[in-house]
Image (cartoon, rainbow over all chains, first blue to last red; front, side):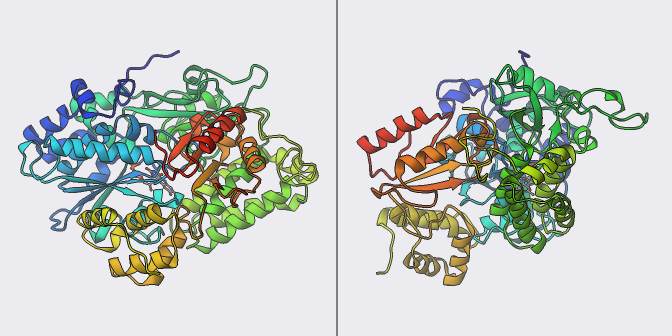
Length: 458
Length: 168
Ligand SMILES: Cc1cc2nc3c(=O)[nH]c(=O)nc-3n(C[C@H](O)[C@H](O)[C@H](O)COP(=O)(O)O)c2cc1C
Ligand code: FES
């Protein structure tokens, strides 16, 4: 198995790794101390910019650039909102940081607040993650007692407070503007932009929203310097290391730290240990959480043009293209949260679409008509297809509905449900036609309801 | 009967409200505290929260109805959430749900005959790599099989049938 150096997860295996007394012996808060006592906020921000770290929450926006969007000459309070909602199906990495090394996140918050001129950070965590919330709250208390946060962190005259804010069970609250509404005590409905949160966010003040993993990377970036961090990656303009998650039909599901730009093949076969069952080969993989279009194991790159961003991988399997924000966009999918949901050839793709559309229909906040109605229509159509009550026209209708949602909603939820639906239909068109004809045997809605699962894992 | 928090929890509220520039921002944490005390969000709880935070009852109700984790009806002392989303499903999540329905004698969305468990369906619990996963009250159980699940439920039945919070 490939052995990559550990930076973000280096303390995961320590005994009681969530305690300050443990991690302090392994470098925790060294960088925060150095940053607050010897660096200027602009210097920190410059390192983060040079690090080319793209947001780890799904959209892949460069964090250093985002920090620069706080209006010059701003006189209002500046907030940091850390996104620990982790609701994207297939994603389970932020939880490990919060549970196993909460001090890494808190140190990141301290450095970030200092760099952006903020005094309060809210870590918004989905309330199901009780252990993560308790570990964070205890860790904050420990850091406060040591004087790492509070009125004068490390003796610096820059007050810092960090609070954990629980969610209440709504995937949409991971969307940054919805998160802000939820934080303010409202229904978690997304806001129209502009204004963007960096200009007008929490409590109508400039707010930087960053993912848990993004903020947890800040201390290592500042420790080694932006350039060195950027060079850890195998790709340009997409720096560093990150935490990959592998789930589904692999031998060793779980999280793995590795450089940005490893290939899906390395993730599934080296890190993930390969396919779970000898006789059931890889069929498809969802690369970045359920909102990203599926990759087919047997697709090859078709990029004959010399200027095509994927030309270097011409004729190679999609699995061999490095996993990066730009490369994956060129592939017609998205890197998202950089995790693989691996499916072997026992899985029916119409069932996959049905499973996921139930998620989206349940989680649509209901604000925009195309998303609210479209998700329910697609759900009903896919239910019908699976139970053998579908028609050939239904497949076309699915595509039409998805196309009509795209771009017509306030937030990216609509695109995030439509793109994968379109991807599934396009890449597995025959399976959808077959379902329209004969249903999906073994589907829980099938009339012949046999005790069959999607794949027969477990 | 009007609802009020125990003095212990009430102290937490005072601390909570120092965290934000507005009172309303305390709404979701406060609702959680109330639910921790009585198990669900009754209309008395809504009145209490509205008064405490200078919100209208309809605003608070709007918040309550938006979020899945606020119970709008009374639930059993133990709530079981079974993840139904893709990564768990392809590792056998559906079998767990069927087994639970059989063992508890109720469907998803209902309470068991003995009144001890409410069975609910969850969307992705951020445990996909350890699927299939379920949550019972505050505790996650991962990498489950039907046999492991049975053992867990046996323990609940014997040890602590009324435990509202079990954290290890
Ligand atoms: C429907 C939806 C759900 C999202 N869920 C999450 C989430 O759970 N966690 C997260 O960090 N970002 C989530 N995002 C992305 C956020 O809107 C935002 O881009 C991110 O938190 C910014 O942080 P980053 O730049 O560090 O990635 C979601 C976006 C959408 C549209
Ligand atoms: S799919 Fe079950 S925890 Fe993510």
